[in-house]
Amino acid sequence: MAPSMQNGMALSRMGLRSKIVIIFLLLIAVPLAVLGTFAYIDFSHMVERKTVNYTEQIVSQINRSLDQTFREEMQKISLLPLYNREVLDILEKYSGPDKGNTLPTLAEKNIMFHDIAGSTYYRPEVRGIQIIANNGYIFTNMDPFLVKPFIEPQREPWYEQVVKADGSWVMVPQHKPDYLLKEAAPAKYISAARLIREPGSTQVVGMIKIDFKLDIFEQISAKFQYGEIGSLLVLNENNELFYEQNNETGGESVRQALLKAELPSGSGTLQLDLGGKPHLVIVDYSAYSGLKVISVIPQQSLHLETAGLRGFIVLIFIVCLAAAGGLAVFYSYRLSSPLMTLKDKMQLVEQGHFKQKVSVQSHDEIGQLGSGFNRMTDEIDRLVSQVYALSLKEKEAQLSALLTQMNPHFIYNTLESINMMAIDKQTYDISDMVSALGQLLRHSVGNYDRLVLLREELESIISYMKIQQLRYGERIHLVIEAEEPIQNWFVPKFVLQPLVENAIYHGIGDLQQGGTIWISAVSFGHDLLLTVRDDGKGLTEEEIARLQRHISSSAQDEGKMGFALRNMNERLMLMFGKSYGIDIDGSPGEGVSFTITMPVIERKESYVPGTAY
Image (cartoon, rainbow, N blue to C red; front, side, top):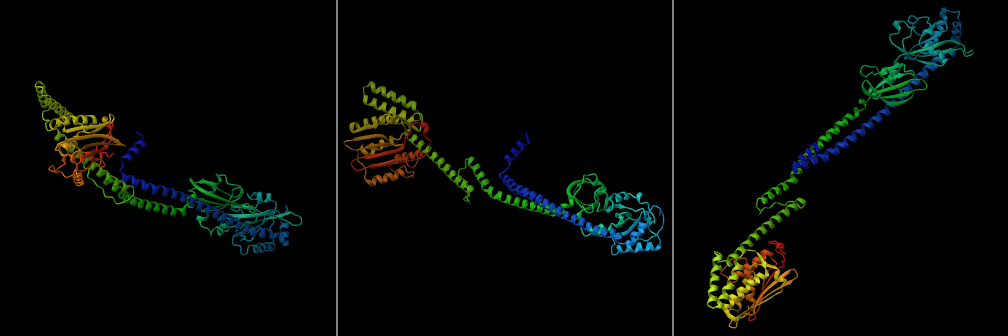
């Protein structure tokens, strides 16, 4: 089975409370996670952009500081020999090819020393200044015992660059000068060198070389922390090293790692993978010095400021999720408890316990559902009781009309035998009475059915009247007024017999002249009106009101008058609703009429027991 189908089945089996808790948590967790993620990413990018901009400004400031330092040092110091005639004369003297290894005089050395020493006063970053004559002799401000007197400049790696510059100064990367003795050169230096030309003839009379300590870079970068500039490198256009600090790329020097990458020839920013970790590389190029100040910052250090925010966002997420979980559990129980109670009550109703109620504590949909459930159980209980009572009333009507049902075939056979004997003896009155009684019994004890055709009910009344006419003679007459279509409508069984019986025994039976009973059936809209009227003694208004109250009462006192009428009235209301029943009208000396109001039932299938039409 597919995982999605399994998840769907598991979700469908999950309880309502669990679903509410999960929905609450998802509604809180998903927006918080999305919002927190986007907020963190946006803040990280903002911090990264600010860090990059700030680092670019720092690197640019470092490069401008180097430009200023080199401009002051190299420009002023390297041009000083051109303004001192004695220095130029001494250099010209020892620039000829015939001077070889000729040493200058002590006075000449002093003149050169004082000129050079005056240039380095208050410049601690300058390690030494060497003015080299064409014959290779070195005039310096350093201790003469630490400097070789002669060198061969053409053998130096930086010499070719100085000659090629043709009078412009040249920056020399880190190196150990060969003219310094080992005890004078424990560390590497960087230098600035240029040719010295005689202003008048522009003849090259020597060169000047200024050696700087690496302190010149450290003094400028010392005021910045590692987090601001990362690893700092100073390279020239040929990527030769001038300065390097904060080497933290995992065993491989930053410069070696950078040389493997393609650095921009000018200023720029790029991302490189150095030492297996992503780094941000910021390059600032100086057209004046030809140096590139490079800042290499690990990407991880850029996110140090956002680590606190990330932890804070995670903490807020956990707190909100815990609060949402608590609220979800609380409200799930609050929302589902009425539904759980309603479910338990419905299960009891399914088991047949209809008298169930739920407590309604709100007016929302759940409260409306509880109110609807209460109304439904009331209606179910009423309908069950109504149908049960209707069945009892019908049983009572059936039992009262079927007192001889114990052995109907025996009664039929006996009546038939009596009928045959009456015919043999030519007593036709008795034969007619027996035949009428047999038809009446067949209608009474036949297959029990709640509804019968009006035609069948009228035929039963005709048989009944034949029997009564044998008793009362011609004093009693029956008139039936019912159109043929109406006779094919359905009515409750035995609905007319109690009314006809009441008209005979209480209306016209005791009158000397007898009387007439009229039975009419008319339709009025969706209702059928069955009227049984006589022209007998009649009733006063007080007697009619008392009889109407009696048949409308639910008291089961059979000793009182009108029990059959009350039973019939209750039966009609149970079958069709309280708007239907028996109405009584009449006056003294003019008879009484009983009108039954019931719905028109053209098909037995359309009848629904207990339905109010």
